[in-house]
Length: 155
View 1 (cartoon, rainbow, N blue to C red):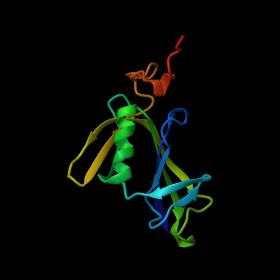
View 2: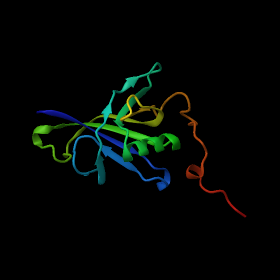
View 3: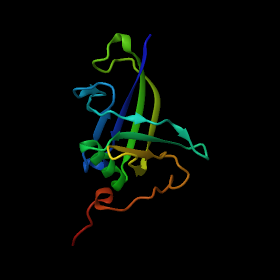
View 4: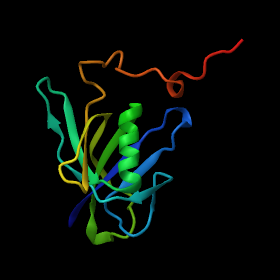
């Protein structure tokens, strides 16, 4: 078995008010269908699932700082949207032109973008905190906007 790892990044939308964005880093040249959804190609590097001081995991995702990718990640940071990063392991000898059935999920991380960095003008790094972080786990630090709570009642 020749092992390969593919990474899938999803930015969730609250109640459909912001378009859900989905990226993958393995199948270049065209969008692919996975889990009944279309995933766009985006070269990215996940810098590891790092354990924090209290055993809370966070990670950083580095993407090109251009176009839809940087707009989507910066928008998720401003709006406090959830990001999900999944990594799958699969046998590359069976083909690498589309996602295969039977991929093994080896890592899953869900959280909000804590901060953004630009180490180089062409790259954007998003540091994603854990959804289970001790600070704000019960009442997450959010800005109450009409996107999150709806429009006020007008009489």
